[in-house]
Length: 358
Image (cartoon, rainbow, N blue to C red; front, side):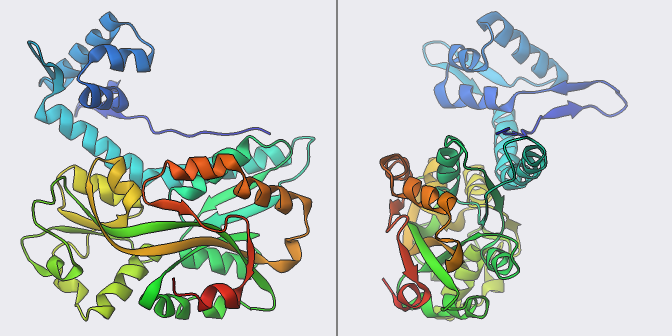
């Protein structure tokens, strides 16, 4: 099976100059993380001398230094260099699901033309942290071709209803908000036709800067006009969950400073907070820890797949369920902050899952 990867290239160009300069923002990010040019050079597989030549070339291009060396304390980025890195990380977090969808589209077209045969299973799910882990493991399996597409919670159910996918990712909160979330999805599911396959739970809450300088511990605190919020896009399941949470607490969303400012992934809102452009976001704990931020847990979600029960006897489906139940998947999820396996690969009815509140 052929696999395709598409990665962004950061190329800068000055006005009235046809030349452009490629800058490796991940190289600068490594300097920021380690304080060592040698570590960044090793990771980029270039010599120390070449690394310094690159830094000098980039600094000359911007007419501003990107790094500063201090005696006895290593190397750090200048404020301008730091700004470049955060801009790149925000954009990469925003683009990642779109680029992965494009690579999957090309991958599907290529593999359908190869002798080994067509794709076996189509998966539509929101872009979180558990599904990519499962995808990595399935990519190692021989003779299992899975077409993964990242779509919103609601759109995955629409795809399933219209035979656009075989597995639809879905997440429901535990506790009092579960009934509100179920009401939005019931019209797309038929208990006699569909089944649920367990996967994980994940912690959802407020993503804040280290030390939580504004003391944000509740959603009511978001109404403080001094606190800058970054929201998720209106079509996302996490945004719908946030709206349910506001309704539960009888809060008016538009009164929140930054309510209209949106990003499309958990990582993107976390990067927004980490770069200092917002004080708080609503998302999963894993995204907060990815950017070394603090996290205020508000609730737990069940994340699972929904499918038609008539595909459960397919050999490919049985092998995928076995991967979900395997030690490697359990180990991979155990390393993701705020995630826990929950009945992975176990098949349940719609009624059993939708009735549960915890």
